[in-house]
Length: 113
Image (tube, rainbow, N blue to C red; front, side, top):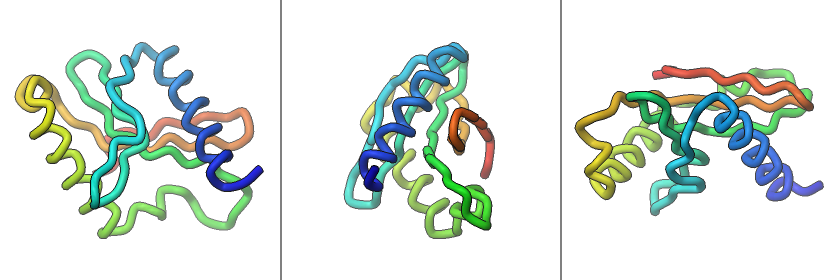
């Protein structure tokens, strides 16, 4: 399986996980020239901006992929999303998240930064 197919598979698993956890999926693969946010979901009064990592047995944690550059891009992408979707900009909290998928195991890390 190539990297693109593996990523799509991971995003499908993540979407199913979020929906079973009570999230409404707002958007997937939201992008502009800065980059992409894999999944934007809503549960209660919180918008979740999630990066999906379909992880294999490497020697570091997917949490380590959140460099200062990645964090800055996610924040700017989120600001752009909220400016385009004003109904979400004032009424909801924001959580930056990681969804780690390793084989059949899904871990959802919220409020990372």
